[in-house]
Image (cartoon, rainbow, N blue to C red):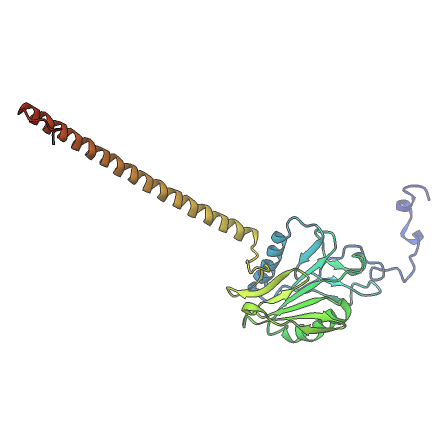
Length: 268
């Protein structure tokens, strides 16, 4: 058909697409996420805290994807209207680090999350412990799954052993080891945080900047105090030198008077 001819055709003469051709069977490569808002500002803050910490820790890496409350589409027939879930926080390893509208499994080489964290609430706890856990175990086969309750500050973790999830035993401080990330999950300051193997807290960029500023301020204060001490020491040394000069001058005057009296001040 010549270029532009399709635009000149009447609606009645346009080619009719087969009935099986529709959006459900041929979805676009980058579907929009379709997740409801999170339960509360606490849930949002917790999700963002985990994302920002991992993004800073792996700021030089480009082989992962981390996000939260984003739809994962995973229907075997590539239907977007069924088989989708939106974990509160998840990490996919061995992929390209880039922005996405959703995680569409059939456009991501069949990859599923390596780590999932669900932030519990009274309305989601049952499904997070039941249906979602079963999907993450049986369909996603996500190696590690964690549950955190921001109200009670309880933390649970599971790792996939064979075909089933097995509880992760807490270590020191009640932290749970996440082998996929090479980090501990633990509760500090009322929030779920990440910790390095040596126990160092994983920081967000803002926290790191604040800590650096605090160190710089402390160093500036120490330098100022040291300068003040040095100045005081110099003042004391100057005063001591002045006292020594005055004592030497008095000794010279005394020696002069003694000589005037015919007495040798240097004689014993």
